[in-house]
Length: 330
Image (cartoon, rainbow, N blue to C red; front, side):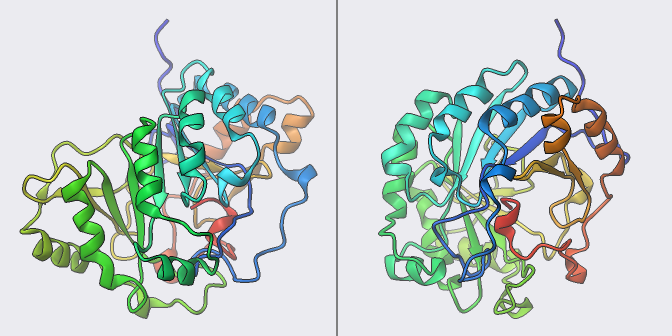
């Protein structure tokens, strides 16, 4: 039986990608993501169960959802995450299930997640220095990022992607060292422009490092960069480059200097069951309560796509009411 064509929004963008937040909690308090004191956490009764998440995906897959990403907060702190991975991989039409993580639990859990069916991993690595990781995360959990990335690679969770939020005066002096990882490993280092969101008032436009500057510095350190014609599998807006002879690539994601709303292919399901159609928009549709009443999701999804906004207004510092990126998993 042929696959159904993906549904499109009012702008004609095919929506094939669903990001699923499984918790609003995190074991880090990263400078750009969450207040140091944390947030008011969602009550457990409001959070979707794994069975409820799987049922939503089961109903949306025939509408063209093909790729999933499990996010948080930090998703690996939710117990028995491998159960959800197995549920999602068993749904007809789902082609790819990925995980975004800070990597703290990867050394112990990567093989288990892979056995459950997880396809690949994106890991946040804002520094290679343990002391600086603790400063940025405002928690010292003993993370060795290279060991965590190697564990993911050994488990077959490839291509391994590394997300680096570049912050001037905080970690931008490590751009070259992070870029050099691609000379030694088949990893894909993506430098992300800082998004000063919500209550993160300590980080401002002055901390944003334009991606053009990042590429210039990385290219100078690695002997030049050329566009990579074999970009890794994924759903996102990164533009990839490669140093001569490097097994890995360097990507840039540019939410502050260039918008990529015209090619947006995603929606987000929050931990408490709200379908958010734009990361920095205000439009949400309650899926949880209708689901718990036994109502179908497809009519809600259809209307949500009709109402998906054409673009965000982050450049005007309109963050859609978000207090922190951790609320929707980025």
